[in-house]
Length: 191
Ligand code: 3YE
Image 1 (cartoon, rainbow, N blue to C red):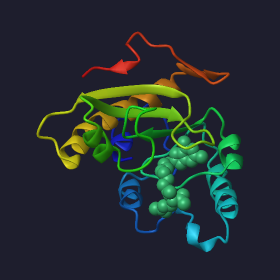
Image 2 (image 1 turned 120 degrees about the horizontal axis):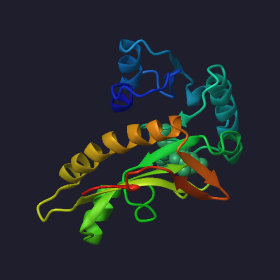
Image 3 (image 1 turned 45 degrees about the vertical axis):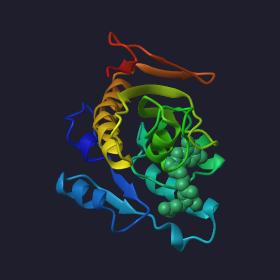
Image 4 (image 1 turned 120 degrees about the vertical axis):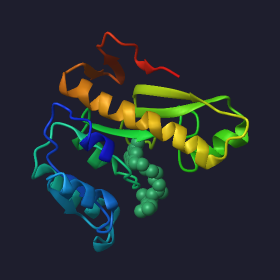
């Protein structure tokens, strides 16, 4: 989220909304003069109620694009459908490998030599939406989950702002589950 705020993108960051009042990102956003809001999931008796409240808060800002950054909740199909084609997430693995949590541990366990991150449209099945962009990093022999995570995070900080820039420039489209990225650069960031 901080990398996005500091990337000097040609967009207005309408608001940063968290489901946790103590999220560091709220402070960071406020220090950049960005609107913040909290929709606390524990105040709602069901996932559907939380998602409805979250959507209502988001819609107060009429965003063109909703960007999940460090957001750790599974969203209902109703929520996901409401923002179809304008809701994106970044996942710390080269999907479809290693969906879910603890991706760096899993990558080391499996012995993959290439790991990375994936920006994807959000669909009802977690971590299975259409892929927009990926960045790859090498896995080194002496990597720990932490050193590997740091290498991947560096790429996340590049590709997520880049994706938002392309979105703002109307270079990304989603048609029948297929993503097109119109850019002179390759879709994949370099190693
Ligand atoms: N929801 C849908 N599709 C997606 N959320 C995220 C991506 C994505 C999505 O592609 N439908 C971990 C969720 C995985 C988990 O079990 N979370 C718990 C809450 C844990 C907590 O509050 O810390 C839950 O019950 O949702 C964003 C990434 C989701 C990460």
